[in-house]
Image (cartoon, rainbow, N blue to C red; front, side, top):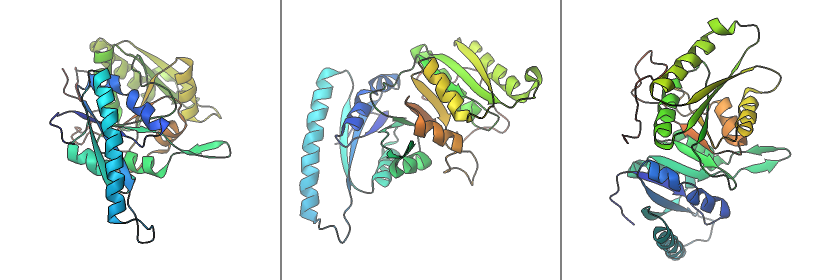
Length: 299
């Protein structure tokens, strides 16, 4: 099903509860970027031993298209949002990434289906692949948590990527009136007022103030608790509805590498997580944004 809408959000759907939740939870996001929602269903490609034939695949595609058509008709009649759909045959992450590039989508939204092993939860391989290579920001969510924008948690450290996160936070807040909660974890023994991390937090907060955005700083002293646990506990404490992270490191050799901090946030968070990708045109030396920014070309 073709569409001419320039802005798109790709929602990965498999008709299971998690993916339907992902669809219903991104309507405000669609209004934010004035985007059409593109539903993508992937039929796993058969191999030589699967017993599938071309006829089987075509029949499966027709059945899926009928289901998608009904969903689109229902959602179009109930909302003010445009919808389209596509069915692809192949490996799930490759199909998602290819469609995202073809359609130049603004966001990918995925329900987070991990596997449980003991007390730990692990991201699925499809999610990891998409996060590692996506050409656009990715929102991962689980359960019935809604994607919200009133309380956004913005973890910061001394690594690169501050500019991108601040730019996205400013743009979201300008549209939704969000309160940005800047949070960081520091080592014991440093003199905070003269430390690099304290200086960076103050600069970032100044950027928000210049843009008329409410923000607060929260500094945690590093303990036996992992850094990401401080952030997740704080996000729950303030009833945050979105966490922004830089999922991938910058640099030629690290463009497709998910950092351990971001991985743990995405993996363990019960709150939706927006994974931002590095700006490809970032100027050398820029570490934060002060002037009004608009990464989505909305204003």
